[in-house]
Image (cartoon, rainbow, N blue to C red; front, side, top):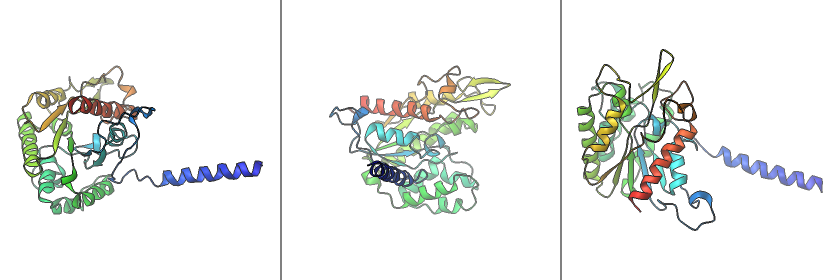
Length: 287
């Protein structure tokens, strides 16, 4: 009897390990979710069940494709089928010509999306130096055969790297307008969600400074200025802005949501807070 029980437990453990091994945290995979809302016995459907959502933007979305990342947490909580096509380190406004990173910035990437020509992006990967190169390559390969006609929503979050690099708000606003208009002209059926930049902090002489008090690259702008631009610019009826900045993260409680010394990219709990913000706003906006 004891041997039978031991054999049964061994089989269960092996099946669990096989299931875990099948998860590729770097692949830009389709992320289906069919779990009931809240994991309860309720028969209430998740708010985006049956919908397809694509994520574009920077490392806040793009660098974590594991189950703790924003995209996976959003998929589980919303019921949507999600695709992560965000690239860490990118801006909305493309960098100067000749900089390989410019091919992955928002303006350049959206041009590739609407033309279905990723030649420049693929060529750039041969010279770009980043630890994410394999992930970038997988994403671009997936995008080349992706069916954008099946997409219901795009969520993009560019902005934090525009601010960090010293880009002007005028250039940022022009870039976002171009991105929105270009996507809408090609795919008018897709509703675009602009997620504002998320909170971040910097250490200055052992004092952590909130990004709403931090003027970057000798400009007069703080990150919250870019957030306000997102919130109060008329982007068009096909764009909805969700405030992912004012979500309750402060300099005092930051250690709950970041793993220092990195106070730019939220930890698992911080990612959950951002994902919940997006899902909650979807539920109220599109119910």
